[in-house]
Length: 253
Image 1: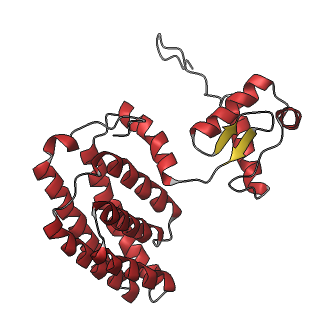
Image 2: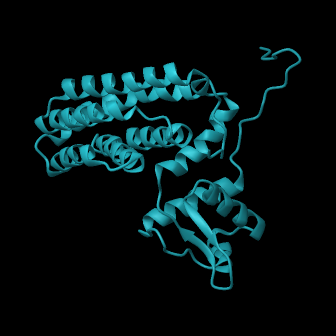
């Protein structure tokens, strides 16, 4: 029986590049050996023997990990690849390259956060009822009332949202949500609620933290969704063109 598809040749199965395979092996060995931020990988000559590849392939593999923020390449005679801490902004920086290609807008980032962060608040309440971490979150929320200036206000509110996300206990939700928050704040960090509303923001944060401490997932989710929805409407009203901007990779304003 003929299996011809006309004039179109069947595309052969895609094979990962050798450098990508080496990068995966390097990452696996970093985890297996328990290496942490600041630890140096073996010398290049040793890695070439260990992985059985050429210098060009090894350097390309290291560049893959460097681009993703997993290692840094320290120059000099005593330099070499050094393990880095993994931060959501590193993931966001890489993701923003794809976002630019897909023409993702800041409005879509807001919509995604409106889905993810309320769910994170619900999970935090379900998993952190009565915990010390939940008590610390409540203290953080209450401390925002005394923020002396806009910089402190931004820092405290950003820490609050990041802490709620982390308390969800889901590493994927944490990584994606915090990276989206970084991408968003990087562009709109100057768009604040007016000072007359900032006290209300901290009041809502306190309510969310109390719901998490009490283990009330439905209330924590509803409060967070309403809180973020109000801010989204505020930005849409005051800066509508901003939300329609396409995310630009590597663009820090």
